[in-house]
Length: 238
Ligand code: 6PG
Image 1 (cartoon, rainbow, N blue to C red):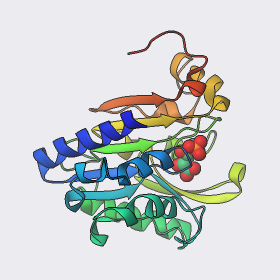
Image 2 (image 1 turned 30 degrees about the vertical axis):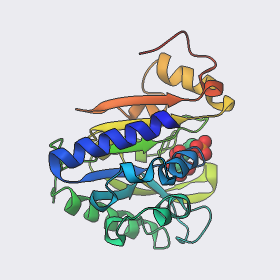
Image 3 (image 1 turned 135 degrees about the horizontal axis):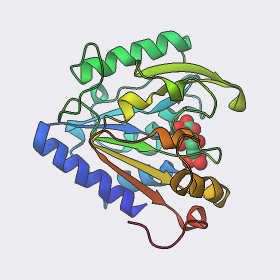
């Protein structure tokens, strides 16, 4: 996770230098927990200018913010309550609200944050995510873009709500248009159970898995993969 923390710090420094702010979308699930704990630790916490950092989420489960299943709850507990980030800089998805209303509200907030009241996202500095953190499930989903569902095919809206039978819950997720406008996208993947899917995502035909829909228009895509999940990948990769 040190590589992920280094990337977080370096992207933050450059974004703040270039546009005065670092806009980051945090990932949910369990893998990023160790990154968040690292960023909150004494060796790392003061390497980020939290006063100029704006935190968003790539997706959220439709549960209250104090529910342990909430992606906000995870980040709050292990990172945001431990660093000097102003409350006003934390923009969570309201999982406790009716899903479609929460999705529309979050899109409005993103459009204000990126001064893009309508139309497609911009790729100009300061008007897009500087960093998006993503995980990947063993079925190739990312954020809450799940195989076979409509969110992964969304091309207009930036945030949508969808009931995901596979996890028996409503989810709210950012969509490929706004994710792919980011300057840096970093996948954090761990777990041997993902190795077969990861090999197909990276080396198989495109258009099969939602994770393959993540292709930055004008940005850098990085996969940080722990050894067990990299088991089936061939040789060193750039
Ligand atoms: C979520 C995440 C989801 C996650 C993957 C991987 O809300 O669950 O956004 O996309 O990143 O399911 O989760 P793990 O890191 O727990 O394997």
